[in-house]
Image (cartoon, rainbow, N blue to C red; front, side, top):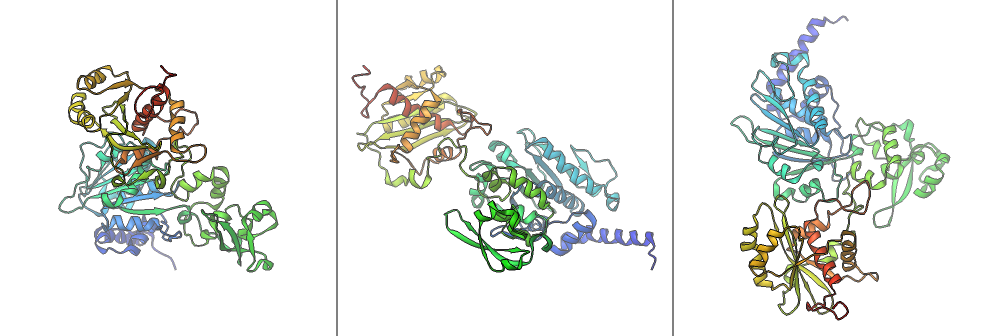
Length: 529
């Protein structure tokens, strides 16, 4: 039977036109999936594979149909985050008249990549009647009144515009203050509700993405997570085999768990194979048992309907550290590798605020790290008769002039705690002069970073595993910095100059007191004199 090409394309155009008018109103996930696949040309994974995860299509449907107004996405490398933004930008623009959309990329290449996905869609001949002007990366206008802009992830880039739909891609690589400015952008109109969409791979244990996850309920976000096992191509029987058997793998608590996989060898039926045996003799086995991914896949790729090559996945898995794989490909919370104070354990070192009672008879010290754009940070530490020390209060204020800090923050704290000394960086002579003028006893801090860090570590945990330093639960910024103060990824013994303001202040106190030879009552030992 011969098909008239003109009639064929006419029917396709009728299908497209119907969807432009009715797809959004239908609220039908199946119609949306078919439209994306047949007209836009993308096959979006729809299978949820891992517990507590979702499929990428769930995110696209919830966002497009406005079931959720604030969406937070954690996804793996090559997990389609930027592509999905490009698809959503195009769908919103062509199906919602007068919809204004802004996409922000933490890095310029991400923003350009998102723009290309979007423009490649709206340039399709089916949408020609909507695009009478050539798209521009700064602003693309459609004839239905919709607009799409691509913005840099800078403070100036996220200031000013108030579109209905806002996207921020790879927030793990941006500054928190820029992200907070971005949060103010989205604004509803009568016809188009606002929507905030944020995505990233999670690279750091206490980076911007983890903070958003921790605060998602307070900020009103719904969390969407998918990983390599939702986006990898389906593993065929010809590769995995069909004979059921089991691998034995240790979990995070070193308990042995049994997982069903497959083999090509009938003699392996229902047998159990320790993972270390497979790793050392892989060439002797077949199917799942011979695959380098078996210890992490555990046959999950049999349930996937994604697109990412199995061979590329093997290449990535065998070529990187396990911690990086876990965080960036399986979307597990990053570990503490690289943290300066790995000894810090929130379950041990943080005590309830109400369990500590400040005693004016015990010596108290303060550490001061000056700042303006970065926070002016003060830490208050009391030494107890049993030899322990407690961080019980903090000041963490941005954009406050020194006179304001002195009058409303430092002086009231000094009047209350009667600190023996405030150890401070002497480079800010003006601030120190103002502190001294209101009766605050300032002393120069010993700023040796390496020795100071070693001293703090010895308080967190001694060589015989005794804990001497505690933090009360109200010191939220101190706790946050303990969990995020890191060394650079390229290595070195100098921490990254970030998330370190209260950490510097703490180091000033513990190391300077030790170097000065002060007793816990503030006196000086005879050998120092």
